[in-house]
Length: 421
Image 1: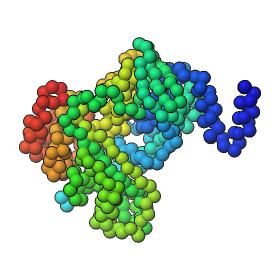
Image 2: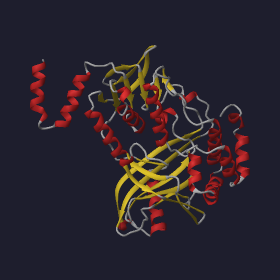
Image 3: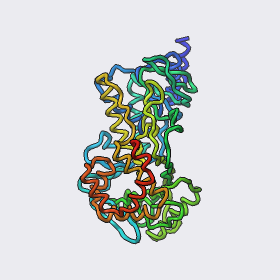
Image 4: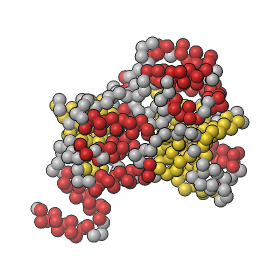
């Protein structure tokens, strides 16, 4: 049988090298189901964790399996984040902005960042880089397969059930499935940050590639809190996203109409003045419930299904990096895995307050955003959203905002606040 396999590989490798490597991997994995670490899901959280593991000298002997329905890098996502230091993947950053703009009620609030930089990374670049490293590393097996479930095998081992079979490991990290019990967690507010974006190339210079429009609320607010997000990559190229905070999604045509109307009103563009080079669409949960840290024994939830998405903003990427680093540190030192999901208590309270306002008083919420960016430096706001402020700074921020709406939100959400949020 070995000689037949070797002959088959010699004949077939030449016409389709990539497909046959995948086939070889599947044959090899048919006889191998036990690993030291399994990563279920190859999105931002799964790939980030894999990268941190591969950089660790202490884990260099670990056998790793990463699985997902598709392991082909896609162009459908853009991850944005801010930081005040060099990120591990700084060479993969697609574009950086030093200046941010917010528009509301006909006003433009523009601030040059001092402490932070605002970055954009393409998921296709991120995935391609880390998957290439994984394919070159003999410790790593790649499995392209649907993931059905996870289960406890015994006190020291858990399993991942896929369409290709069952695989076991002492440590499994998953971002592919909603954890059992999630629907039973206390929930008062469930909104979505949903958007459709066009990356366009205009026929004439229109954009400032050094300034990103973080939120422009000067659009109709008929379906909930609505704004447009503009990331210019050059004077003629930009990603323009029509975004809402609401419970109900729109049709593609409604998002597209919002983008077209904005480009006409803001830039004087009609359909003949640009071409669409890429489309992305997404839905991010904005919920007040806690997410379980574990899917089951020894299967840790990561990424959005691990509660890492900040409920009031939808930002997740830098939280993923922190969790991945903490997981690897724990593995290196034989310590318990970090099982904290979400924010500390006071930041959960702040998120509860804002979620209640977004859900019940969208017009008031736009006024609050306007005052927030009018009266505070953008660096301070980003520090607050990153949850790195101290209570004195937070009091200063809230004192710059209309206080009655927040008192109402505290009263309405008191049953959550007094029980630990």
